[in-house]
Amino acid sequence: MYRENKPTLIGPYDHPDIYPGPRPSSSFLYHNGKAHRIEEKENVPVEKQVVHYAKGDDVTGTLAFASSEQYTVEELVGKEGLSSIEDRIPLLAYGSNVCLAQLRYKFSLNPDLSDFLLYYRADLTDTDVVAGSFLAPYGALPAVIAPVKGAKTEVWVTFVDREQLELLNRTEGSYVLREHQNGKFTLKTGEKFERVYAYYYPHAYLRKGSFVRFMDIPGESKLPSMWQADLLNELKTMIGYGGHREEFIHELRWDGSFRKKMTTMLNGLDETFDHPDWVEPKGFHTLKEMTRSQK
Image (cartoon, rainbow, N blue to C red; front, side, top):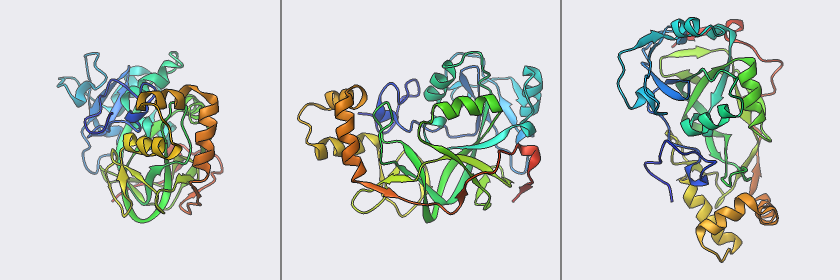
């Protein structure tokens, strides 16, 4: 089972215990299949931040290994001939879209598409990241954003172009995009944006009368936290599965009739909610179409 020290080279599609995946300890650029650390200088706009660009092939890049190559974000955008950061849409990442192995897998689905994605750490208040009341294709309870008054959770703001957004939309199943305009999120650098978008699905797993947040995700919350592995262990016991754990996981992923039985059970453990901070968007705005500020 995977709990602490989850390996960075495998993702939830390899094993559901990995979900939502190990979180980098810094803002980063994901590009050419690996992570490049961003310095997170306070009061510096996202496009002016300095990137430590990785030379090796390891997916952890300069999150783990040093490099002498440094560029600003806008210098790299120009060097690659890509759309500017101001022409991109700010999109919240909070589940497996922060997992490096998951990113490598998702962008392998369309190798012709640029994988140049910025990930800026941010704090979000009155929202927590909790287990949904449904199964992802790989057998995990996936993350949803839910209203939790007073909570403060770590999320990531990415900047995607229209083609990247379309690719991510196709990997997000039942989720829809919602918009946040309440100003309750701030980058670790101190920068704030008028709007940000996120994948939204208003159904959470109710365990002993409470939502459950993920141990992987830093934050301050009144909710209990659990590892995905332990959530799956509990579900195995609840459904009365007699085989060993890996057989259970295999059937979660590949046996349609068993997945249907699990879905029926989870439907009985579902709490439907409405999050007032996240509303239906009227179009999707790029960074240059919204106001920006420093705290």
